[in-house]
Image 1 (cartoon, rainbow, N blue to C red):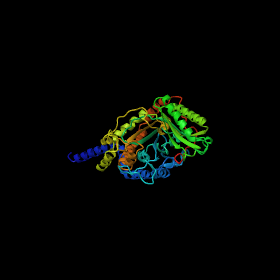
Image 2 (image 1 turned 90 degrees about the horizontal axis):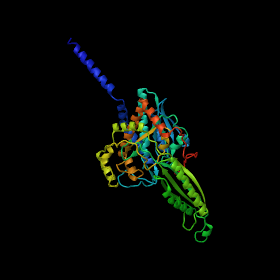
Image 3 (image 1 turned 180 degrees about the vertical axis):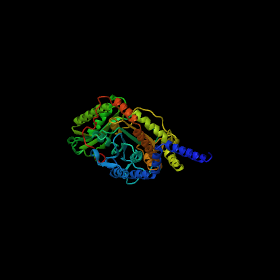
Image 4 (image 1 turned 45 degrees about the vertical axis):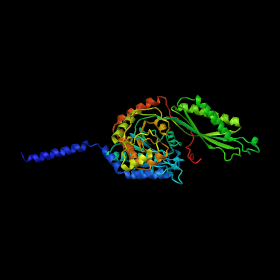
Length: 480
């Protein structure tokens, strides 16, 4: 009988080893894969950071992301919805169809080197002050990891990446939604650069923008002023009336403008002037009503100054429609992944940045923390992700790619986004998105519950109608 003991012990050892292997979560392999590819994705993000291409001009950035996806085995369709830099990359077959959004446009008028002091880059007039270089790269990293998991697990389903240009005022996603490109999608995931880690599902402000162009008659402002009709006077009259209107608009409305053209010389009556308006409110119906009143003010200004006015709607967006079912799954996975921990070098960089921030900025340690989950009211901004959320259950997160307390659209955001601080936050997002997508593929009930919540939120009679109307994408809005 003693001779049996070694065999018995071996059998017990093999059984225990097999049980351990079975107990290992296959998601751990996905996380390890993303860790092992950190350098690759950091290089992609840094390249897009360097290029800093603005809306609808992101040719190199879009191409680079597409190349990464093609090399990973995705089928890529470029130039969708009438936008040369938009694309859809797909892998797999059948349902569920899980989509991840990817942005990659920079902001004009702000530039900064990857250093913790204010230092513009000479000859560069745009920068990734909203972290879209990280957004796009982190999203493709997540999708590629999910593709590898689907392939290895032999599971049915489709993972997609939607390359969405011109989020900053160009509303690229709106045209993709309008063209029905999300009609067969079951769930959409997205993320954004931030100074904290959070999966809270907040709403946003609906938004409609337009450029109002006034045409007058030029004349010598001193020798023959009676012959002139000032387009600039019309702009100023319009602005004055809209500013008076602020007292009589619904609470939470926001109206802001810039004069983009006001003449070239004081002694010439301007025969052309332009003002660019944004109108925002949590309810898109209120936005449309307020916008119509702004149009009336423009028409009145033209009538009173003897000029003519035309306007062009540049973009228009819904308010974000949160989805609690998906949001809780995102939050659970974000907590599993954890936040961003600084090396000594990164902390030294962050401490220098913090000197330029308000005194009440959160401590640097908060970059490693996960904020409480919840569904809040509208924030102060707007996003074209919102239009997607009205046609498909959608959820997202934000991660600490910037030093805590950093505001979006700032030089501090550009600086941190060009360093390992931004790249680490990007990896947190990629991991969280990948884990969440895997949950959607493995547990059909999540999508079913998310869709039920979505149907209740939009109401039984809702039919999506793009607020931009039937205008084509404004491909030249950054060059005019």
